[in-house]
Amino acid sequence: MVEKPIVAVNFKAYYPYSFGENAVRIARDTKKVWEETGVEIILIPPYTEIKSVLEVVKGTEIKVYAQHADPVEPGARTGFIPLEGLKEAGIHGVLLNHSEHRLKLADINWLIRKARGLGLKTLVCADVPETGAAVAVLKPDMVAVEPPELIGTGIPVSKAKPEVITRSVELIRKVNSEVIILTGAGISKGEDVYAAIKLGTSGVLVASAIVKAKNPYEVIKDMALNGIKAFKE
Image (cartoon, rainbow, N blue to C red; front, side, top):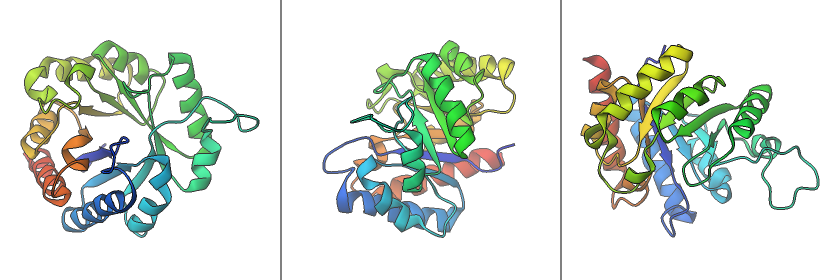
């Protein structure tokens, strides 16, 4: 059972926001929010920033995930990212099947099994409730339902399409009673997190609202506090 709200931050590959000192700043701001609130936070930086982000959050309960992994064994695989290499980098888990980097269901299944064997967590994205249920059958640790048409719009799914969240929860729970359910797409402020949790999820997957913010700390803190409020009510 999830005891704390979850805020997962996908850095994507926004330039310059997702890289270098900007990535470090987001990690530092996140660390401060974690120290103040204790919410569960997952940071998902580009591959190039994994080491620096891990260094910032060292000694905390903040988790660092990779943005993707390829369904391949290590070897002569130029340009591919096997899970073993990501584990060696120090990550705690991996984001799979984001709408910007889709995977076949068979590949998702392979990666979930491989990750489990390596002791890594999996957060798998789905575009619609039915896909969320199909993915949940594969027993990932988390499923995030994100209608792609709302990603980056600032229009939260919890307001534009609340039925997507409630339907996702309904279908996913029919096939998997344990998987953690998140929602994303257009999540931009604390009240969006509050609404998403009240609709039956455990938290959110966020990107540009935090990564491109003038003050990431304020946005993360607002989301964390509203998540705590929703959990307590």
